Length: 222
Length: 139
Image (cartoon, rainbow over all chains, first blue to last red; front, side, top):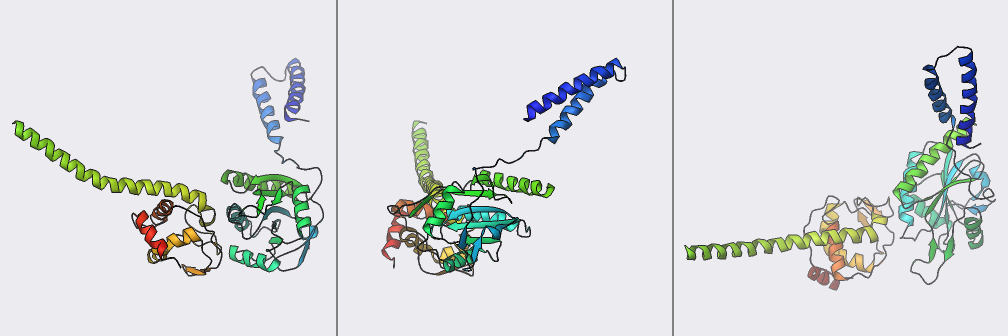
């Protein structure tokens, strides 16, 4: 039921109730609008903002190697909310700013075990696990909270397009040999995508932070 | 009285010229600084940051005033040809690659004026001629 229809039915029910009460002379006319407003306001508060579910299927099963050359699968992210993105270590255009912003969130949620991070490299030629490890260390990331995934071209490009709805194109003509969008993707514990944010824009990153908090609160209530 | 007036106008023009000469320097500096900031935002900020803070151990900060002072004549080469050497800034080793950008000398001068007068640096103006000389000494 949409919030407006919901409010309408509450109002109608209340108005009916109110007439009955007036007939019963239990409340007078001055009290009525005050009570009506109070009920409208409180019923409005009950309407919780919930994030949309994007895409028509959860994130597909995967099996990649991480920065420690250890296999990572969906189970690595079991019962975790995570932020995913696509990048490559030699990228000097949008990746540094994306990871600057992602690192800030990583630092903020360092002690929150419900949150993880997953960066897929799209440079299957150069970004081997050891290169990813080197990159992670230089970014100041240690441990398993932020996973850097290395996989075959097919597997990474497929999951980008089908599951994360992000376009990745190999472009041999350009100076930067890959075209990709700088999206940071918010994934919930049921492996559903709940938001996509331009990781190069401050105001979008602020939205991501807000939504991540919203999702954490939502999960906590379950 | 007439002579006195002519003298006054003459002196006025003379002072005006001197002041505007000094102003021209200032105007050029302001112009370089402003254009340099635009170029910095487009080409440098992604890695070096809006406050010149750098990016962890991936990209060096531009806040090390001593490094910038002692390496000012190398900056033009770094900006134009990129950088693959390992450098040590503020005690941290940076091994990453800085991409080359085929800028005109004036663009390089503007970027250097902006960078060396921001983020805690205050080194004043830098000219296109100095850039040309610096580029001749690139390794």
